[in-house]
Image 1 (tube, rainbow, N blue to C red):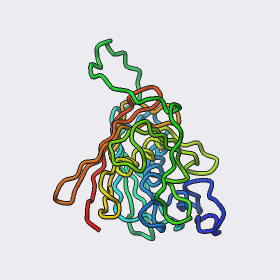
Image 2: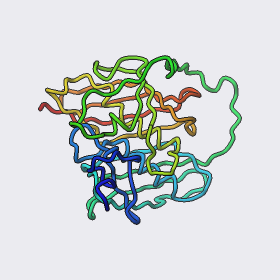
Image 3: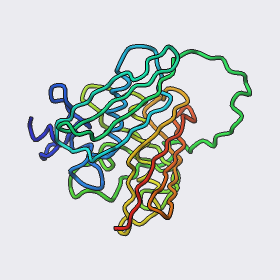
Image 4: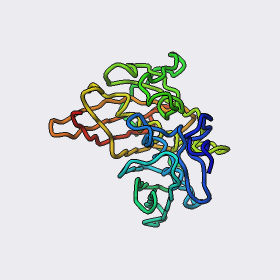
Length: 274
């Protein structure tokens, strides 16, 4: 494996992961903001989503996906990925996948799938009114100013952020459109679900209202609920973080695509003083 494969050389990676035989290696484009040796949760979530999407060819849609980030996921290290159908079914099924580093689990996912079928709904079926986000093309891109030295990273280089409410540098809540600008794997277009979970993991980071110099607030999980298959490359989020006084918190996001309301995501938070 070369230095370019691991993301450790001066060459700029062109994907979030590269393959090493049957294993996957996170490039520098997957790097997170807390430690340059470790991945952001977004790329890991997208890789796990790809695994559960590709387990079979049946016409399923993912209705709920929960990622647990059990340990730091290393950059530049070959990782094994195992996927299985945990509960088969004709209408509803469960699929799980586990990501390991030298036999040690670093992340896992469980996805609830629902059969895909055209269902004609009455005109008054959806009575809740969703307040849509302002268009993504109404504002310029905003690049994160907090980074891990001079190295490339997921939040600074692999995504485009357009804030229609709030900003990177101000406390949340925020409204933001997010677009992947590099693929999960070279030569492969990311699916809508992969794009959504990669973006949804930003909920905690973009809406944080605790000062970075004084507090750590890390999400060890991500749960995404989807109303329908995502449409297009832009994922919109209206997101806010809330903190308890016993060291836990919650980041909640309404999810959108260019067709409208898409679903919701939640993240549990570990909160601690530095």
